[in-house]
Image 1: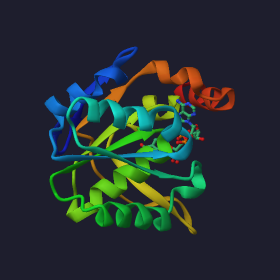
Image 2: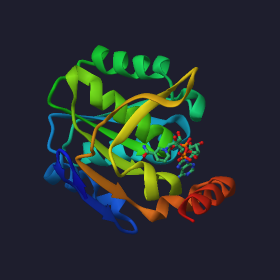
Image 3: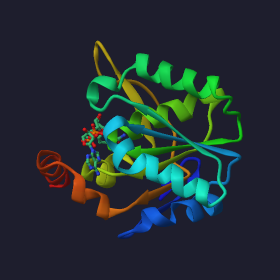
Image 4: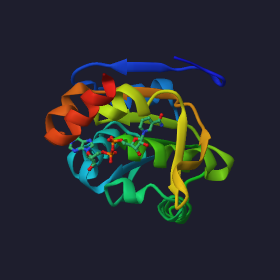
Length: 182
Ligand SMILES: NC(=O)c1ccc[n+]([C@@H]2O[C@H](COP(=O)([O-])OP(=O)(O)OC[C@H]3O[C@@H](n4cnc5c(N)ncnc54)[C@H](O)[C@@H]3O)[C@@H](O)[C@H]2O)c1
């Protein structure tokens, strides 16, 4: 994909989540990886991603937040940012957003603003996130006045989409993704 900041790769393949550590090492090298997921996806994939990164010699930590659109706000952005600061993540960090569009937007905005900006890798696990939210570089949060009113353009370093993750997506979320695709 083309972005103002340059080009980035979009990897789409069944089972590619297992190759994430190699892709991170090649396309998004960092001293530490902050893996951000909502609590539902953290249990399904986020924890596994961290374990696989560690098994591969990468330093990775999981930071999660309550699932749902209600978390896409400045309070949760501040909480996640403070969690990264408390754990001492420096400028040599890459944020890895593993989840649906809410995670991509929220974690992307954390990355866009953390220490004035660190790279983000988008790992979409919902249909909406795979076909739309993970590409294009729009990140942000909702405000009382409306959706997506506070944010930043922050193109991903790389996007890694594993369609296998759709297997666990609730039916209603799949339908929403298909409607979005149409
Ligand atoms: N940045 C953009 O360009 C862009 C484009 C379109 C939509 N969006 C944003 O995306 C958000 C909607 O995205 P969404 O529908 O993915 O919402 P979401 O991230 O809340 O995910 C929906 C639900 O599915 C769960 N989930 C995600 N992946 C799963 C999986 N593989 N298995 C089981 N459960 C899973 C999540 O925990 C959540 O409960 C909105 O906030 C919208 O504004 C952004």
